[in-house]
Length: 142
Length: 135
Image (tube, rainbow over all chains, first blue to last red; front, side, top):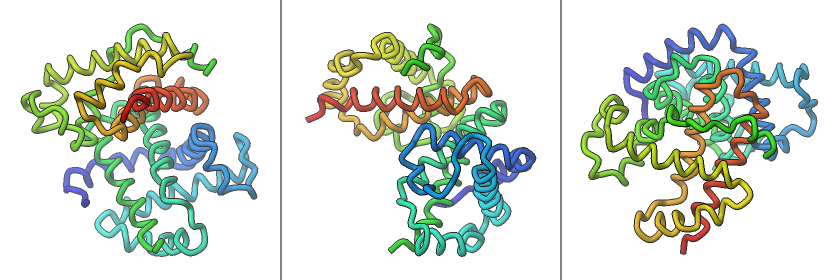
């Protein structure tokens, strides 16, 4: 699965808008994830996960920044996320099913904040992009 | 499920079942006789797709009215999807999540994390109910 030129253009242009609210989007994505899919909290026993927690905000920022790195190197996502791929494979070992859940919550957040931009084509492009990101992050698992 | 009371809307016609066919093109496999599905705009404008979308949404409306007995409400449809339509239940999850995203698009800020969580439970319940009679 690889992105077409049109899909890349959609993602890069929307990222321009998304990055202006990056931290808030990261935090909101995680809040949605932990509320809708409480089992994902099992990866964060060491965190204060209450709304507004500093840890939640910091982690949300990290996640969105990583997505941004993938966007900026959209022609070489595997290269951009190589370090994170190893981190997830050898240290974090988050079960692969959770990448879909996080991707879904990010899409929900983006759809809620940028409804006019979130056309069916944009939705398809983002879903595909996040699917590729998830693949890269799990490709070293075994 | 109490939060679902907030989201009771009689007119869900803006929800787009059509979007499923655009975002997950392999779902088109069930709609070979629907005519032109060759592009996103063809799909979004296809009258058969729209008509089918309405059917699906009407069923979801029934689900909202019968939240305490989803399995009973969808028993017949479950048999239909298994025996006649041969739809992999995985598709119910895809549609459920896609509807949640469309709700987010249309309700924006109102679609808070708490409201989303209630809807996720709802669509999960519908998916399970629709798969319940599979054999």
